[in-house]
Image (cartoon, helix red, strand yellow):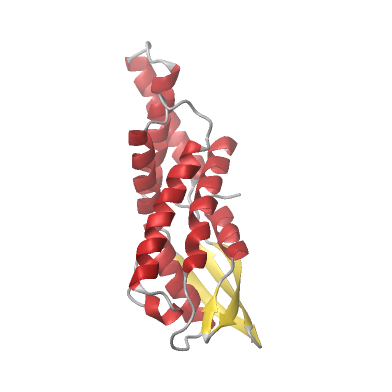
Amino acid sequence: MKKMKKLLSVVLVLSLAVTMLIGCGGPKTSPEDSAKIFLDVLLKDDKTNMEKIGMTEEDYTKFRSELESGMMEGFASTGLDESVITDEVKNQLKSDLLTGLSKLEYEVSTSTTEKDTAKVEVKIKPFDLTKVSTDAQKKLEADFTANPSMTQADIFKASFKYVGEGIAAGTVKDEAKPVTFTLTKESNVWLPGENDVVALMNVIVGM
């Protein structure tokens, strides 16, 4: 379970570091609204208000492309043989992660502002990876009982499949966890930093 959490954390942090592609310029928006818009784009792929944080259509297209590329690179860095984590497995995991992220629930609290810096508290329900893992293990045991000749490669592939399904289903904990964003105002736009993304991802995977 610890290895799975570490893998997910690495994959998400690598892929979501591209959020720094968000541009500057645009209308003034409060730190709270900026954080909410940022999370909507980042997690839910909702670009409705992205121009309010200076993101253009071109920025968005590049962002999504690099986000997905980053996930694939993260999967490739697992060190597992390509016969186990095939392109098909990677693509399905990527799809499951994106689907799961879109189902996360979060709320943005009031902020404190000092000059060009604002601290915003975000409460988000993280993935319940313990439940995801337990459910996957039960399915694996049933598979192995039905087919004792399963190879180690078969078991790994099934593990990724079942864990991915659990994440895609939006299996989250009941209690929301807090994470503080430190936004910086640039050209009248409040933007989070890379450390905020890392902290968010760590909360999401329960690190």
